Image (cartoon, rainbow over all chains, first blue to last red; front, side, top):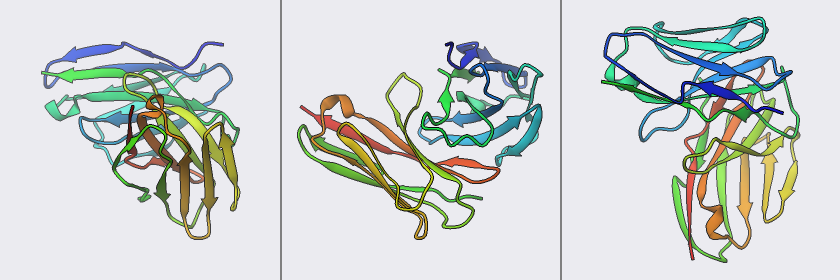
Length: 115
Length: 110
């Protein structure tokens, strides 16, 4: 069974540009979560999608947005990039309201660098 | 905003030592508490999913307990090994939210 896949692995953008990050969840998982890990900080919650809808968002400005497609894959878009957006972006997936022993499954992340 | 606190922030132990960390979370709106191990250059990997007050989980040398009434969970590692070196994260989950603590970074010296 394929795990959570994220693309691209690395992304270099210029300040002011837009970045699009992609995530494919484990087959059958309907919830997708996005997290940011900036240098020296812990995992900061960005967005949660389930069944195509945004269920919750963290304390990030509106230029962080995303969507979930009918096949449950998801995109994270960051507009008007700023230098401090440089971070590792992790995606995780789960079944809706899953309390299963496996927890949430994470992808390997996209390393975004803004120059 | 959910406040999930982990302590200590970092820990250095010798091989063979036993150790434990704490995760504190709000005592209301509890749905589940997860523990993850995050090794450098890898993705966080689930250790335990805990859902009931009084839960105790065990996987090899690692175990965890949960007290939802007072809002804390302990993770124990018995006889630490160098391969246990990682950041240990807890995640507090409610009906519509999932927040991680900042983690405890464990270094086990041979």
